[in-house]
Length: 100
Image (cartoon, rainbow, N blue to C red; front, side, top):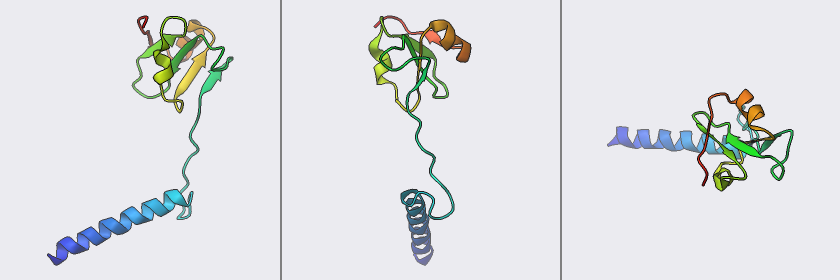
């Protein structure tokens, strides 16, 4: 019983220390990286023709004019391109998502 209580207390303290680190933005010696937003490669969200996600494991890219599913991608990883060639130069293994 006493061992279980000590384990619970140590888990609580570890969780509290992690929360303080995150809330303090590095108060305990580590920093929280800034979240990256949309990256346009020569275009803006409004003018890019092709989109993909930089998230590891992503497979598809989307053409604005044929599929709006790109709007569901996380803005943290959203990458926009003027041309499919530019997108495939950076992400050569992506496949065009079928029209939605």
